[in-house]
Image (tube, helix red, strand yellow):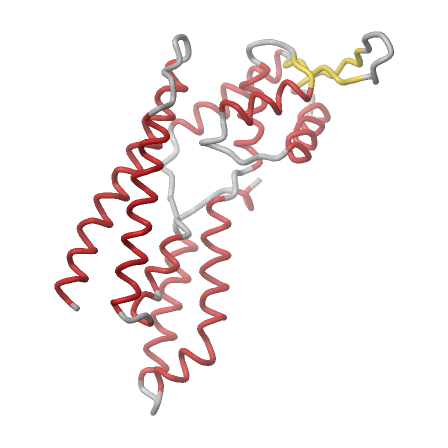
Length: 230
């Protein structure tokens, strides 16, 4: 499981590597040109991989989502995937094959039970149920998730790190476009109806909105900063 745990430490390792790399080339004649021509792709690839690794939902969190859904009642695969698409799209982009694979692993580990069900001439389908061991594991994962400090790496930070390679008359309009898209996302999530029973669902939506509001504040402040530098 250790390989799936997200940590901010690897990102700082690679960020320091980037700083050393730039310092090294800056001492050579035409260093900036060489840095841009020979190493931009390599730097971009390394940082991109780190950011995407942080964004991938961990195996433990996939298990937490699926076990949490089954805490309510037994369900077949279609119901589970439909619930994820309709209600959890703001916290996960887990696809059907991944969900089914994780359910099978949870069954193999003894956390959920699978029964075969057939109605009329319809194909046989699996019905998934959480058992006592699964409930214990669910609460263990839930407490771990709630108490964890998250290191959030954003794909948009990749562009910020290379923004000096663009003229400001191109960079600033791009940031303004990003600002407007962020505001539209806030409006979109603000239209989400409040859940009457599950307080946690409302908290997750509020958290998403709060993070987007921080992004808007950051962009507004730094767009003005860049305009004064231009």
